[in-house]
Image (spheres, one colour):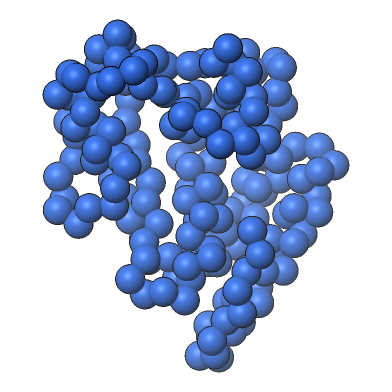
Length: 177
């Protein structure tokens, strides 16, 4: 059942799964694309968490499940090097609780779960980050196939406009998701 949820999440269905990637550039894309809508809000940040699969697997398996759906069934999942975690009922192990509390909020305390790293940028940098990822052809790699072409073209146009407007010091129009 969790494999079906993982595939559904890749197509935009809300689930209890927390999406991870083994590729830091893929994580950067999703953080920056989510931050694009907040590019005019100086208080907003984009956040990327990095941790090891080993750490995830050493947490209590009765509380946390690591889900690795077969990548051959989903082209996007394969190209995004994705895996998921989900809670199995109520979390009681302190390590697991601390990891998920820290990951679920953007705290400025600097407290991080052991073995994890947190990287933050202002959301206003999202268009530049996305433009850089487009230039590296990361976005085309994340969304292979014909459906990725219009997505990349639209994103490129949005980023150019946002960067141009920011350089002019103008207020930017909202960006569609």
